Image (cartoon, rainbow, N blue to C red; front, side, top):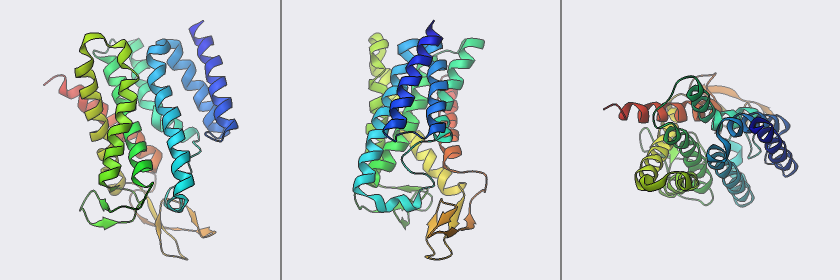
Length: 260
């Protein structure tokens, strides 16, 4: 019955999100699938953190887009999430939950929430970090770079990452009990560090393209109504894959720390 409830819940969230242009049709189907799995295996304990991430991050994306639409030209995709973005953000969490059904994973809930803290921190860092003009630096060499470019970090963006990780971690503390201080500390710290790892991966490996018309560097295949040319990075690594790898690597690092 829980899988049925998860499916119904997913249909409701997916339909509303599609109606308000938070998700594309493929993103809505991915949400239904993910909700069925997460609620079916974990009920509200596991559903609440991913719901907090999705709702709050989607609203923040919409707000930023109305204030600073100009930075959209650097992003591969708009704030309307498709299947790839939904999986990139929630894929690691789903994998953890599914693996826990096959083998018992110690601290599984902490790992699960930490994976969502990472993607929330990265999303909030991007949205808050570009909501107003501010100095942005390339994380690899700390040289000034344009806002919205892959690997760009700023003070306000890092503060945004802290708030993003905190929003997800706080949504889970009701199920933690007396160890909530340790839980909050570890998941929030891993979230912020994971977002920095995301920026490093983006700056190093994410495919970048150059517009043949305006010469701007972008994540897009098309710019100024013309095809862009490959500029740097690895062609098959886009922003979705960077997000997924960052959350996965962040969880692996946390898992290794448990055994030190």
